[in-house]
Image 1: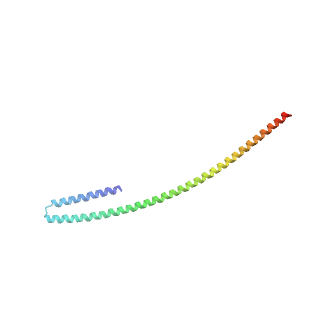
Image 2: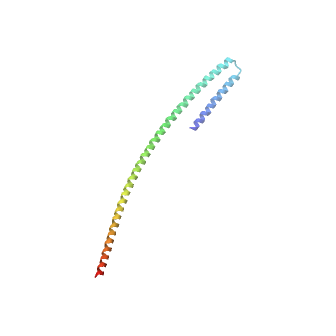
Image 3: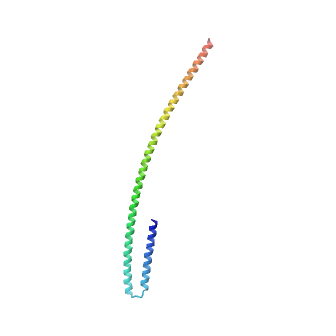
Length: 140
């Protein structure tokens, strides 16, 4: 885009310089006033037509660039929506895996706690039976 702006500026300078040069050449030429005015009129019409053609070209290029930009924006929007959907799916899958892992860990924790509780009960029962046996032998 930058080179198009530079080209447009160069072309505008070229046209303006040409107009100024042509006007000076006509004014300095040894002709009658009527001939000079006719020549200036003819040249100004030529330059007017040239400027109109260039304006139409610039407008069509700008319209084309606008359409391309709209297409690119639409494509980027589609890609971002696709990426968003993929992210949502990945997040949902990760959440489900986390729930399963947490449930498994909770079940293991419950099982370990139950086993530890049972071992504790068994240890208390054994200790009580030993202390009961010791107390009975003391009585004998």
